[in-house]
Length: 234
Ligand SMILES: Nc1ncnc2c1ncn2[C@@H]1O[C@H](COP(=O)(O)OP(=O)(O)OP(=O)(O)O)[C@@H](O)[C@H]1O
Image 1: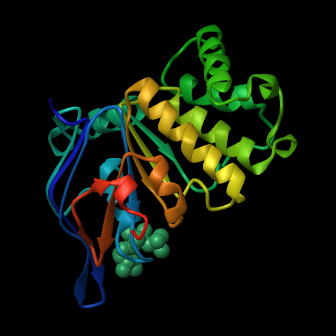
Image 2: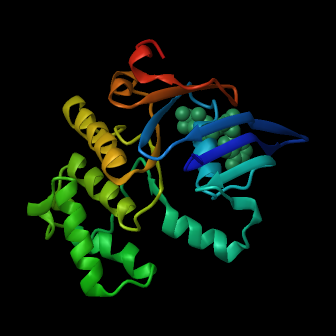
């Protein structure tokens, strides 16, 4: 089976004064559909860089990034933008919701950008708000939602385009323990139910066992993934 997300021998160098800084050092990573991987590692080890490369937002210095078997580097800029829009969902640490819009409208904007009709996008948005446990809050604006609820809207919004790959950056950073566990459990369930290949960057090792596997970064190098249950000390 072709992995939904595949990074092969990926190197990413940033310019750094006279020289370069190697943020990703020959990274290999495969994530299959229906699997959620935790990405751990100290600050500055390259986790966000890996997400940016996997999201086709940053072009690696060398190596191959493939989504659903498609080599991202071989796509023209327009096709790459379309791949990002249609096949990759991104959940950032801060939900970045628009203050004046209701929960359902936050989701509809994403669909509007993809050219969906308002009626179809509303139906899909309401369906996804139900999936994330917010069926009763579809009319609420961000200030009428808790931090955990805002993060749920954020996740539902990322699922609007029916992505194959879901990239999540520190989803629990602003949440208390109970809400954090619920958010990671939701991501794990959505990964299975929608057949996503999910990569979740996390500093909170306690939530790693709720995911399938964990891979740890150190100085731009990625250690092979191990089952998450065996990772209490990751
Ligand atoms: N745009 C950039 N230009 C130059 N160097 C960068 C840039 N972005 C990141 N870096 C450097 O690349 C390395 C990896 O950074 P990255 O943000 O990927 O780490 P991280 O593991 O996500 O860190 P954190 O957990 O603190 O978010 C760091 O040394 C960082 O200083």
